[in-house]
Length: 122
Image (tube, rainbow, N blue to C red; front, side, top):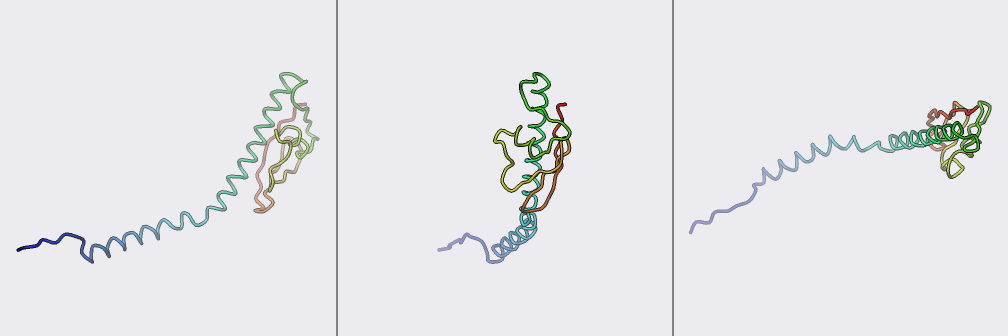
């Protein structure tokens, strides 16, 4: 009786393990430093939302002066954000400085900064 055996040889299994190791070694550095990129993306999101809120406020005030908030170039960015943002405050972990229209958003833990534009209504 002839039995024909089926399966993988030891060399084939070792080669698959080696190939998987090489792929893992080349892909690993791509995922190592995602925290810094995530912090930058979050900072850009906060700065963008502030700019968007400023643009909406400008449009609302321009269309009808009883809507929106009158922001002058002497308005501090912190008080402008408090009056135009829906929640009325900066998200935790961020600060804003400067005067309208040029505001600077800073991460308190990472120290990164991003400019944000809030248009003056008058």
